[in-house]
Length: 288
Image (cartoon, rainbow, N blue to C red; front, side, top):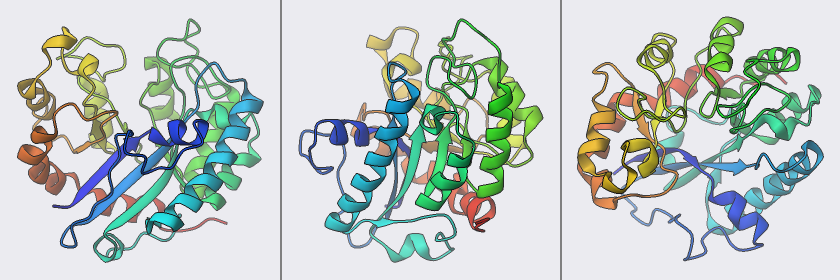
């Protein structure tokens, strides 16, 4: 079985606990099946409680850590310009380095190019609160993109870092629509029509992402699947997958809710996602 996971933030735990990425207590396992292939997006989550200097420092520490761990574990870490139509089938385990919270930029526009050179493939613009780029979903200030944020998304498109709007406020989402030209994605968001969580996407937002040629990663955390999280089940996952028949959906689990669910519905979902084509079209060419 081939598997793409758009979002896994175990990297933060491994770095801050000074542990190994394959620590048995973590919710990450390598693919040991020689007949299948797995590409994992390893996101360094940067909590809103960090100041920008701390976030930038943790980002660079995590970049070095992930490179070292991928070398140790035999994971092919793919930078911008290194993902071709046969790359995925060439490696049993491959990876993208991604960022969850644009606070990592520390308000320095030059860091966008520097991140791209390091190999960052995706950046979630905000976490839940406000940062230099703009307003997160729980931010009291619903300003959307700041002036710096408008410069940042333009630089991200220039250097091939895919824009991720999971955790964005609605105002920031629509600013991204108006300020960008390339497809963008939501790495781990569900349907707000089905589950009234502000972190989920409205029907209009889902439609816009699809029309722009982007991707939507399904979030398997129970709080986003059901208005009563304790009752989240397989039927809820299916509802979020089928909420739009034309949706391009990938699995991007913050944590595995039910492994059996993935085995039942993963294959068809991945086949419809066109994941490889998206990254071939959006981030293959280096701009540095």
